[in-house]
Image 1 (spheres, helix red, strand yellow):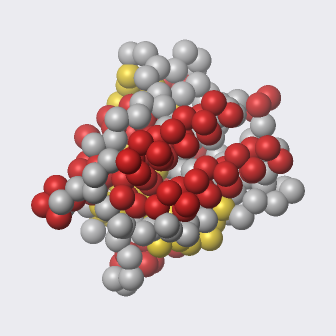
Image 2 (cartoon, one colour):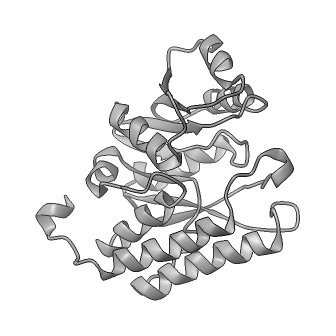
Image 3 (cartoon, one colour):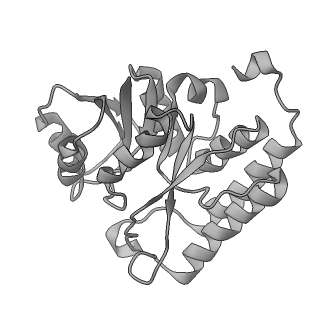
Length: 235
């Protein structure tokens, strides 16, 4: 099994070197590749990526910013692994948790695994950010009669072929809701594993806003209203 770690990057010159170092330092239980998509960064991110030297690393550059969903699509289209997981470059997530996500797959318990964040005073950006996240997750659970703990988690691990079959259209942060909505519509319930998390604030470059939460709920409603795909279309 080969794992493709997909890293969308936009204006992260202060963190990208550490993000690459941390991701590549993990003792993974399988072969990995790190596919980084520089999504039109205007700071020094591109120069730092150009100096990175590791046989497991591939860098793809968007000429202009297109959004997280678009960057992930580019990375998935280029991925050579059997499975994929998304890892943001903002250092909020610890890549040391990725092997824990792989465990249920490697022992045959799961096909799709989500990293479930436990928010606390030391790990939450703000009260309203956490409530917004919980509100979007609750909307998914109500609409699809499911019980997942963290819809907006970056750590979504699944087969590359499955992600491609979802045909995700959202170009921005709405891709998180679209991926989950399409999985739940196919009656695919993610296996959840607890992970560590440290949220950064606006002054540190956090980009997601309340508007993204509203869009996420709209996307979930759209996916719930669509007809569930046939078995042949879902595979």
